[in-house]
Image (cartoon, rainbow, N blue to C red; front, top):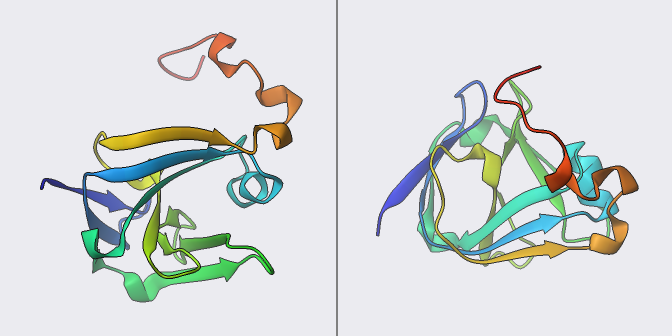
Amino acid sequence: MKKIKGFCLCGAVSFEVVNAFEKLFLCSCDQCRQITGSAFASNLFVAIEAFEWLEGADNIISYQVPGRDISKSFCQTCGSGVPWVNGDGTKIVVPAGSLSASVNVAERLRIFASEQPAWASELELVSSHLRFP
């Protein structure tokens, strides 16, 4: 199967993953919004065997949300979100924005929509610009 690469912003951390993801979760829970500073986290799930660190694994810091299966791993140089292992150790959670190519994903789900902030509703109706206006 074809693999794609992912990186942090500064390039200190890199990885490779099989481009066959089980699920893409767009999660609007309170913790994912706080951890990303955005309307939702965009996380892909893949089997742990389909993932490999290329560089910089020792440059990663992780924060585990107490009492929840939510974690945030990031490059300690630039702060970019990088993949992390889920709570039971069976999957790698890959921030979709860290990948360098389009992904093949079996299922896409919006979750915790009840916690989505009002300002993030109907984002498809917001005007689009190719660059900063």
